[in-house]
Length: 352
Image (cartoon, rainbow, N blue to C red):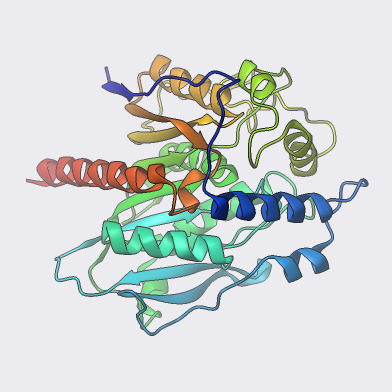
């Protein structure tokens, strides 16, 4: 039976006051304003306005804070690419690879968005890892399962040595046999499903091996309203109005929120009992209205005898780790680093 560990802090009372730095509150207010103003009542998004309001950062091949960045096209037919973050000042024999999926409810943001460029730079620098931050298709223009297809396509691209050989900036010590999948919010949903899809088809990969999953406050849901959604209505970032709109934009007509893509541990959940699901580090925030869905996911993994560790920060909001001024952000990076070191050590022991 797989080991399962948990590291939690007390769950806050719904009436407990949440104290955030002024800078964070301003940023959240701006984020809420943007995501609300660009959503139309007919289920579409004003992309022109969204592109104006979402600040993008260009790749920088010159190392900045010891990290250089390059954009790599992996699916020309759909104009899909990933941003490659390469750490410098490193003399290690091999570097692990993080395949990262950004959040935004499947409908917003980009691998080029300033907030995710900054986050992935921190991952590369703090974890001494190569990061591939993936630009996937967005809803409602592209509905399920487009995004899931895109996540699998990037793994297949990385598995092909000819693709990597054609990239002059690809670090020679990047180890495709030491890959971690990671994502937050909607990206966490994508990361989970990619982990399942990879495990079911791992024999089709020649070199690439996924050895761990870092899932940060994944965007899951269902037809019912769980306690955290009701009690934490009005919490920063997430609201039921927004999540319901986003699920409707993501799912094709005829599917509801108890579909396995949304309610991963619900009545239509996929059978993963015989699947070699990767060891998982799951983060939950006490002030995240989605936390009860995330904890159901944790319990579902445990029932299926998967190796999963739950880390809950009682005062953390949804997407807390993208705000470096919040103390929990630094704690997350420390937890991820320990998880990486443990998984890499296990893999190396098996090779001896």
